[in-house]
Image 1 (tube, rainbow over the protein chains, first blue to last red):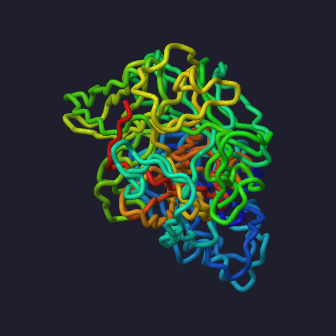
Image 2 (tube, one colour; image 1 turned 180 degrees about the horizontal axis):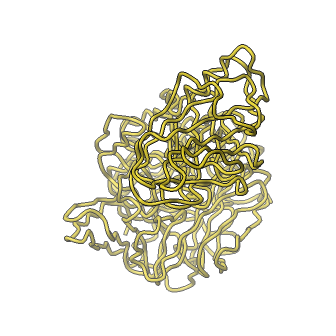
Length: 311
Length: 307
């Protein structure tokens, strides 16, 4: 989505590291410290960041992929941004480029191979974006310096897999819990002295309360336009044409273990006490009632003439 | 096809002869659901959270039914308040207002009983449901009739059936049973909208939700049916509530749930997104659902028997 995106870089010119003993290397980025190559400064660059100058992003995270790993232990590193408008590819000797004042210090158990070390780099990214010379589509880079990691604790990512990435969410989170709505109490129709009214046995229909009525034409009821039994195949949606021009109210029961259970039925993988328990859903569109269940079972359905597109 | 015989009653100030069938207050052209028994069933679970209880109906066929769990509801994700004496539809299907075990309470019928069975629910806990049974089928059946208690009242057979010999479950209407009815003013439509959402490495689990309270004005907890249609998730189809979609492949869930009490019918719309490395970032567009709600005048706190 427009609001959040991740950026990869597979070009070998966008990876480099420097070992305090071994010197500069290109096409791979290494973090931590090695008994052979010394403490690392790793650099990774992301070209074409499509964010305008001056934007303050909500957050940004650098995900560094541990394609290869050294010994187990604690890896201590500090991550800076490269404080340039449009930092160049990582050739020559890029390790002396200016760093952002913002940094992220991590002291963390070395990630397992094929896992990620993550650096929250929101402030670094915002510092770069705030530069007057930054333009939408420019490149930004990060340098991650060792900060006394345990002996021979390191990770590295070659450029080939493009597994490391930079994730940037531009805007703040939306309101995930909108203000609830409400619908006011309706005005009921006045009682009338015409129509049909049937009371329960022993109650004078003229004096019967609403609860004592079996039927009154002051109100409506669902009218069954179709009902019947269908044998369904697991996972195959059954469509039943209803002949109406609107989606009608509907109801269905699935046979399972000799019992009948109302749809929808979805017990989320919990133990079903009914042998061979089935789950499924019923819905309706303007042409059909649609039923799908997860087993070969009988389903008994009702289709009502009452529409779901009015009210 | 409209028939020129039978009983047809229009709504006030409408000509029954010309009013659309779907708008009539009553028509013998189409059968209705015929309520024959309602009441409560409770089960107290054992140390494993299991238990079963049943009520006999002895209809000889598995009847259609509805069930609501009776409980105090609270879902603090959306609302810190709790609501006593509330009714949550469809045990056996996830409905967040019904607590952690609503989907572990199974209600079902056979030829003799309606059952409430808890399986893996909370240990040593009492669960109560209110059930409504109909003199209508939930299975193919052509067997014997139920015992009759006399030839009084109003009885309307289906087209082609002799009303004097039709079996009771074959009737279009019988005043032996109670009709499940609603006022037109308590047929409601409304929408709920949730904004774009995205889980990320920083917020690995993001959820969002909202609800609408529909004041029904009845003064007791009413039987209700609700349906929803999404503008993004299979937008042509209306599904019944409650509904829970779990998309494990995309680390995404959504659900439409609800309950009622003596004041309101509440319907909620909820979505949740997960992030797990190294998957792409799941982002979900804003989504609006349109809800259709029939609030009937049947009181879920009352019992009824025509057996």
